[in-house]
Image (cartoon, rainbow, N blue to C red; front, side):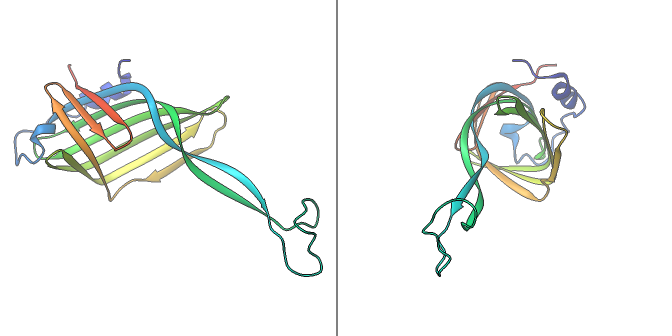
Length: 185
């Protein structure tokens, strides 16, 4: 799968800066990832629970009118096929820009689409890379309705295991590994 025009345009709009303090030299460059693979996605489910109450009005835990019950929303990480396109630019001074477009099925008739943008600085130590996000955002929508949620992802850090071999960069969050290739203009 080739990266979308939006991802390529983002890369073209961000030039690699001239050499400075080379904290993240091994990651320096423009990298793209496009693919579909199993990832853990947090899924919500509604559970109805019934509780017995002490006293004369206790109906022994029966269900129906008069039974005390509670609705609980549970979240569970669930393996899901996620389609993802990413563009990562790392400058020689450690500044980075990371744009992600991903989608996955929420149900048989509804897909979730997520757009993330992160800007900040990356530092490396051995095979670990820490992305300190100074400015970031996430926008998520569903194909089955007009509901859109937006969240601020600024002032966060994300640490990944990173390996590079020639024009290939592998970034792992511990559950999934994304394979990036050097962007060729």
